[in-house]
Image 1 (cartoon, helix red, strand yellow):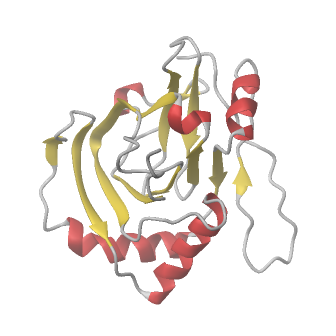
Image 2 (image 1 turned 45 degrees about the vertical axis):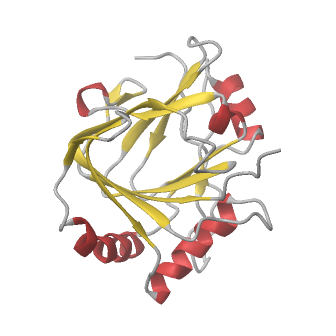
Length: 220
C-alpha cells in the first residue's frame, strides 16, 4: 500500500435540503499537502454526486449501447484492459440535467466542451494503466461519474514517481482532474487484486464511467 492517500472529507449537508450536496474528499497525513496542492489546481472528488435513482437512470440509458459490444482485452494504446466503450451524444431530458450538473460543477465558465460524452465500461477484472490523456483530444479538465462500483484511482507524478496519491472513487461519486492532476500526474484505475485504500479492500465490480471533457486548447 502507498502511504500517501486522501481520506474522506467531512460532510457539510444541512437537513431539509431538496438535494443532498456532494461531499468533497479531503487529505489525510502524510499525503495531505500533496492533495491540497492538487485540489488548489482544481482537482476534486465529490462523494454522493448522484443518487441511486440517477445512477440507475444513467446506467440504464447506456446499457443498450454497451451490451451490443463485447469486452475488449486491450485498448489500441495499451492503457485499458477488459473494457468496452462508446461515445454518446443524445440523452434523455433527465440524463441531460444530470450531465449539465456535472458540467456546471467541473468546468470553468465559457470553456467549450466536447458534445459527446465518453462512456467507459470496465469489466470486474478490468483496469486502466497509468497514462495522461492526450492534449490532442482533450482540454484542461476531465470529469467522470463512477457508476455501479467503487474503485481506487492512483495519481503518480511524472517528474518524481515517489510523489503519489491514491483516491477513493466511491460509487456515485464525481472526480475532476484539472491543473497539475491533469497534466503532471498519470492516473490509473487499480485492478481488483490491488484495489486497497487506507488498508482496506475496495471490492471491484463492473464499473461504468460517464466522462465529460472540454475541447483541446488551440495550439499556439
